[in-house]
Image (cartoon, rainbow, N blue to C red; front, side):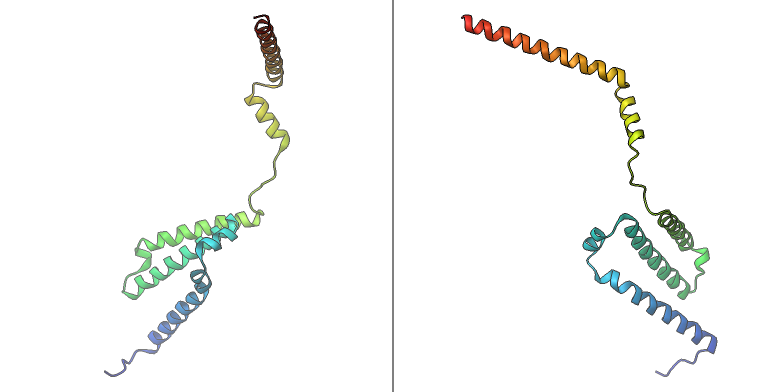
Length: 153
């Protein structure tokens, strides 16, 4: 079979397509060759999110490229919504990275207020403490009385 003669603009588009696929393969090689469980264990949650978004974007883009090669318009296909969704999450992760990640500082006064409120306030806690001490004293006295009765017998 002889070589197919293509117009120059089609050849340029094919070369761009091939270059894009090659670039994507090179970019994904480290991710695809690594052990997924080890890699994810070594990453913090934001880094894991970035990896997942990159993979979702790569797969969606490859599928959009496939849709285009079979003669369909990706804009008329559901893949366009998927790419928009991936971009939305990419924006959220980028925003979280700009903010410096999750706030892991404990606000001690706020935590104390919540604990106090859950326990019915400081006065109730002190009353419960006094009540518990009274119950312990009563239990000890009962035990002493029981021990004295056993000695008498």
